[in-house]
Length: 97
Image 1 (spheres, rainbow, N blue to C red):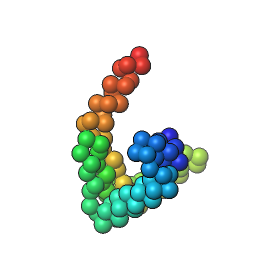
Image 2: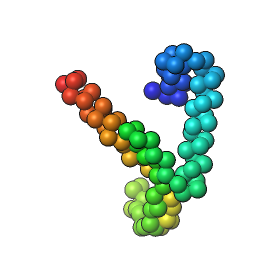
Image 3: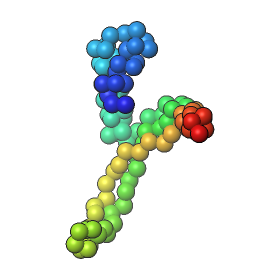
Image 4: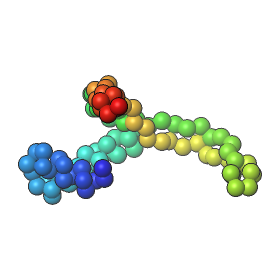
């Protein structure tokens, strides 16, 4: 599902216009991004947690040449799945088999 399909599904489910849903989704994504940029976590109980994690600098290898290269330290966004979402996904796989 891409963003347009998500907007359409939410609009249909909530009986709102696609424009309103798109504005809401954009505001949600902007709020999550702003919070992560500040270093704060965003926890949605049952769905999951968005968090920032620091990655240490390390030595990598160019697969084409085999030459070593330095990979600098950086911060990355992570998502940890909440229990309700995890259970829902696990349950849907069991039903398909």
